[in-house]
Image (cartoon, rainbow, N blue to C red; front, side, top):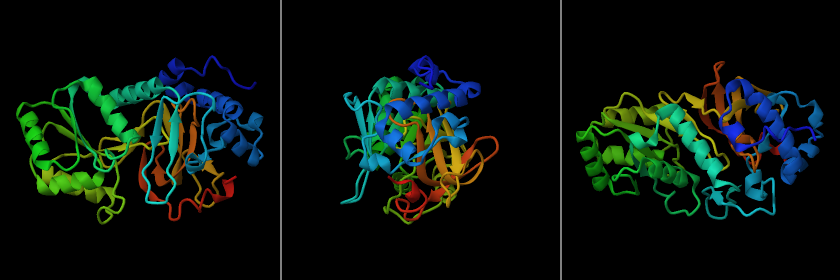
Length: 331
């Protein structure tokens, strides 16, 4: 074996620092190569000699589309504690992320949130998540639910389109000078802001993306400008996550994301998916150390730009993303 199992445990991964990130990522790569049959088959199809993988840019990144067609786990006999499932149009295959250990996800989420925002107990948490609430296995709903449980504020709650009720709760919390996290999908936040403008002086508004044909597509800066005007905000925050990941990145201003400690983003050439760099513009690859029991190395279909300090912007998604960019890597 080419990996040290003592490094591959929840405590080491959740307590990782930037100096140890690459070492643990490489150990986790070797572990998943041996334990995850789908990932191993993918690496073998690329004729990858794992003994020559000595840096994170040389690790093979599994196309995110594999989560639509395969069960990506390190143990096919284990019972999944959670199954996160993506949204999809009628007839379209959806991604499924089989999470073998719910504690790893929850601990990673809470540690990452606290790195940026402190304890959830400080906040009343309001989640405006129409369409997601209609699905049983949406990771975003589970994320909000976990934060609400740790918050334990009596006014925590989920909303679909009960704008008058949500406006009343926000007004009450604002008058009490209670810190609030309003977490919402983009189209719902825009609809709510149009219907209920008000000053939000004690509220963090965090958009999680998500237009999906519900509105005319707007770039992030346009969305933020509207929300800031309607609610008299200095900044709008953003969260970057997906069904296939257990870690998140957060942007506290201007759509500039920073990864939590268990996550790192790299960039691959749009025309050569095996050309991976630490900075530049192209398709985003994500290393998620919390994906211990699935795959920690995901080639996404997002296009972004990574700055020298490791912060990144999401610029959009690939056209015909299931067919381009990753196509030469499909099994």
